[in-house]
Length: 120
Image (tube, rainbow, N blue to C red):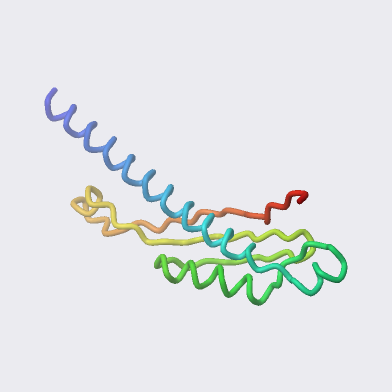
């Protein structure tokens, strides 16, 4: 009975570690999307009042954030709706799974962001 309880406890710890890794990867994707939406196409905004993203600089900012976090991913910028969607992929080492021969797991999470605007 003790052996079964120990195995169950270890399985629960491994599941919790995987969920924590998923949360970390989702946070990286969210942060990269927020980094991207900070790059507004200012000339268009000044001339027309229409909020659009500058695709090249927004993509570069998101990619730089992914790289600094040790992640890779896909970045989609919709300049018309001023939305950035980032799919981040990380390899996370799960210590308990490493004892079972699984060195790390690949986790992919997706997040989107749009700039917040408010009337002055």
